[in-house]
Length: 246
Image (cartoon, rainbow, N blue to C red; front, top):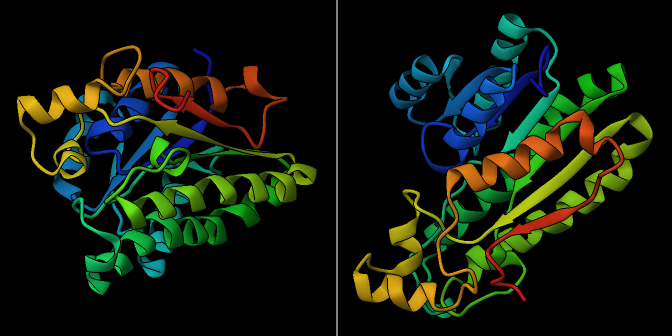
């Protein structure tokens, strides 16, 4: 019960890493809002795991503000925010990615953090405490060809994490990030281009521990960074990648 009495919002919580993190937080005693653009799925997962389901489009400032208003109404002040929602473009040469895909990647992966910070940080500053966890990617640490602009958006996330951490530390707010390697999530096929045994084998050959990451892997790391056990940890961009970035 390491999060007993805490309140948390996890975006992109209807599936994949987000669902795993939100579920673990609930198991550890937190009251959790499962936020996702797929409202039906968010409510179903929240009901299954025990929590609140909420629709949010993290790339829309009004939608994000509404989510925080609803969370505060139902749960009170928010202790933990996990910026997990994200998208990618298909593997494509950088000069062939459409402007629409580029804009979508940066709207969801980057501007969303601006929106959630604008909505939540004033509350945390006033209280003098809070924890924010950003889900980045090994793509932002060790970029690979053809996921170019997705790589850049996740590199942005790591830099944003550090600058948020140093600015918000005097207010008692900790900010960290996780850099997972690709896992068994809905985005896997997009990373691979096509989800075939051959493509999986090729990708796995680049991971020294020889397997994809799982929602449980991310949930364990997220639980530590968002718990009081990590009270002296801020500005860390932790790789959960089986050694891929070595």
